[in-house]
Length: 142
Image (cartoon, rainbow, N blue to C red):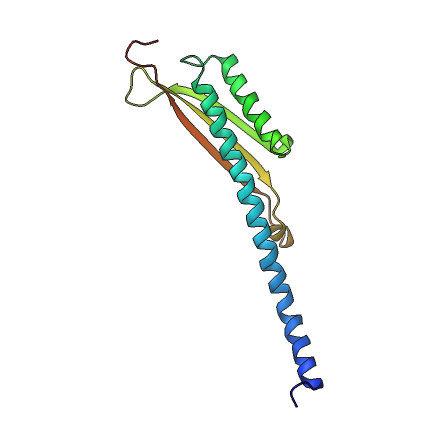
């Protein structure tokens, strides 16, 4: 009574209509997971680079800025991200409102091709993370 040819044909028609939508949702979930994992890697490694920079002299020299950048890139590479697409900027300067403290700012970004965006002819997405840490000199100006 219920399992005739009409029911099978109806199920196949519904599957044909909904399968592209279900696949798009699945690819979107996978892209979201990849993008979040990439952002998490960039944020953690930028924070690690900023923490490393805080342990150096105040203010940071050009050589020390290069060491912070190299350490950050090394950490990003150890997580498996291709360094060809990764950009890291390290800056250091005085903290607003303080005459003795300085800060280290590490910004890491990468370009990522998302499957769902590629299907519709879109461009890659840029994922950026930034870490900012204050280098406290203290009262004595050590």
